[in-house]
Each structure stands twice: as structure tokens, then as C-alpha cells.
Image (cartoon, rainbow, N blue to C red; front, top):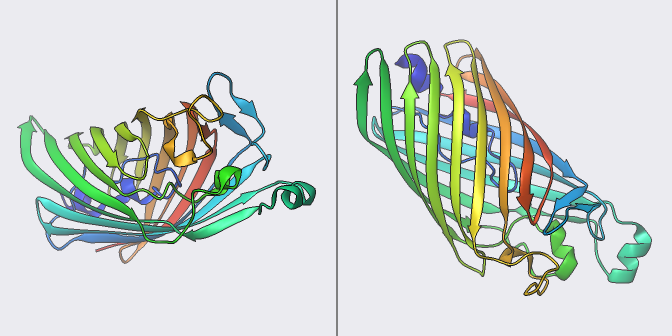
Length: 292
């Protein structure tokens, strides 16, 4: 079980994509007094927007958008069954509009700032022995709330907004099958309650991976279905982007390699497969991780 504790939060380190496509919680528990701290950076770019009824080639006004995010992440085990998880990203979004268009509309090609503070807890009430494998059941809950003073009500300029400026309360149920060989399967589902006219959402994720003493890797598939909302440029849309129906499916890959003395490096890649009212981006990330 020692190696399981060592890798307990690596699956969550590569989370700094601006739309939080992955769940903030993994299926591993830290163990009492154990934890992880990570500094990560991610990059994503899109020049196609998934809309209803037809996708749009080229981002309105800005042609294409790039997003850079630098994040701090920490997880700590208060007991063998109870963890706390914190995260805070700084995000910079950039468009590619011509200076002529910017002058005509009074817009800018950049928005940046501290985004939303994430604070989560998770609890493992039940674990079952299945031969040489173990099945863990975990429940989690958390709060995401804006920490920066970024704006979301600037019309089409808000295509470059760094978040939706909503406070969300999230509940998650997680099941993880963990084999003696290091192979694991994690499934989870949850619901997010949000304010500021942002639609609530159903969330889900499935992940398959390997956690060994010298290497960690996983592949994942995650999705979100908004509970309401409007479509961009459709009936009911008044230019307030946080109120849109943001539904998507995204898949990705994470890897982690330890270096020395508790330090290691991780990397990840992800891609939107389908969705609505969201940029069809490909994202890449890397992290420096310290586990103790």
C-alpha cells in the first residue's frame, strides 16, 4: 500500500485546464499525514467553437484563442480516510483579432488574472476485499469560488474571460477498483450547484491506469451536461456567456515519473471530442510535484 499512498493524488495534478475538464478528486486517499504539493502549467488553443446547430470555424472577433494557466495544488491526509484538497490557478487568455477590429469594437486581445479557489474534502467510508484487489467507495464535496476580480459581462470581449465568475457547490461519488498489480479503474459521478446565472451541471468521469513504484499513467474520459442554459447566438442569448449551456465530452492522458527525494514530474494531454458552447481545444500540461 505504500506505493498507493505515494501516487495518491498524481491523477489530480494535471487539472489546470481552464474549464476543469477533469474531476478535482481522484480515487486514491493520501493516508494520515501524507500529501502532495504541485506547481503546474497548462496550455490550450482552439480556432473552432462547438455551437448549436452548427460548429463555427474561427472564433468570433478573435479568430483563435490560446489559454495559459499556472496553478498551485495541494492535498493532505488528515486521517487514513479523510483528505483535503486545494487548488488555485492564474489564467491568461489571448485572442488573435486584428488591431483594426480591436479599434472598431474597443476590445483587447488579452485577459488575465487569478481565477477560482477550489476547496474540497473527500471521505472513504467503505473498502472491500475482492481477492487480491480492493474496491474503495469515496464521497467528496467542495466549493469553488472566484478569488480574482475578473469580469464576465463585457459582451463578445467575454469570449476571453478567464472563468464564469460563479460560486459552485459540488458533490461527488467515487468508486475505485485497485488491483495488486497496480492497475486501477475509477468511476465517478457528481452534481454542481452554481450561482450567477450559471447553469447547474451533471458531471462524470471514468479512468483506467497503472500506479507503480517507478511510473504512473492513466487515460480518462470525462463529461459534463448542463442542467439548462441557452445557446450562444440563439434565442434567449443576451451576450452573457456564463448563462450558456456548456456541455462537453473530453478525453486525455496523464503520466508521472518520480525523480528523487519525493520530487517528480508529470505531463498530460487532452482533447474535446464533442460539446456545445465551448471551444474545441487541445490542451497540454506539465507539473513539478512533491509528495511526502
